[in-house]
Length: 477
Image (cartoon, rainbow, N blue to C red; front, top):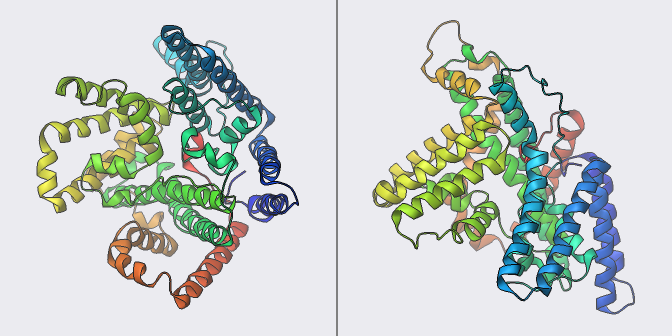
């Protein structure tokens, strides 16, 4: 079930908000009310995920059970070595499930390719990838790791732990929420009209980013990538590259905005997942601004335990390479993602070793460098294979008369979305940021802001009612 669907907006969300509101007004003690609300949200979240298939739900329940009972087991062990091996077993169970459902098909196809067999030659059935598996498994693993490190307390109620893993706003696309950040919110959270209004605002703007920019640009991008890539010329290649760079940002950040907004409506506070990443002046800065919850997860649970930058430069470079290789692998079961991770590792290491200080001194060159590196990297992220990626890259150097014209793929709507997307991904915030801070509390501005939200919501609903194109890039992860 998509946040940007009529079913979610008109049926599921109103029922959940109304149910949560009613349970919060029952003449009971606060602890009893919060317990009922937690059970209600757990049922709603499980239903939300089960809408994609009971097969998906069974897997998520298995992940909840593994980490809940694994956490209880860890909490009872006092011998450090035994506790460490227990953690390894729990993580192996999580990663085993992740490998099977996400990477088994790639493993099989690689063996078939090495043995020069036709696709399906081994006779093994293709495994269906459950939606959001990487997100909720990483969330669950953060709990048992923090428990081992004594950064959080053991959760003894399986229903509350299940709610942490399955809470529908951040379930299938993040942000990745660490248990220690949400633990107290399971039992005490603010629910005020102001927070609900703020949540609605965040949801509306996130929905607009997704529907009115990402979806429009996505149609153009898909048409280009589905065409004969050997006939893509320079104009079409530039159009597709810019459009996809904006599409993936508005698609993912829009969904994160909606998740954060939904959390606010229900009294939960999730950490920000994006901070204007296309304003970055280096690749290091980009990864501090892009998919912040994933970057933080790898930093806290992989980079620092490996030694971070404490064991000398050579070890630091190796640690960075490992982290970004894993980042690429996390994103998908395709060798293009592996390359994408190593590609970023190369630039991060170069910045640490040589060019970091130069970029700090020459910010304007840093901005150009960062956006070019990121945009080029998205080509491999979008491509189904290296052959497709190389064919597409060749388009930047094709000036033949038989290549496609970019006008074959773009409409007026596309160009309007491009202009709006370019302006709102950083320049607008820089230009009006200080003014906004001064006027945001004024009554007239707030009334105007509310009107804009209502208009955007109405336009989005009309667009969703008319159109059938409504994918979400990060569902595959």
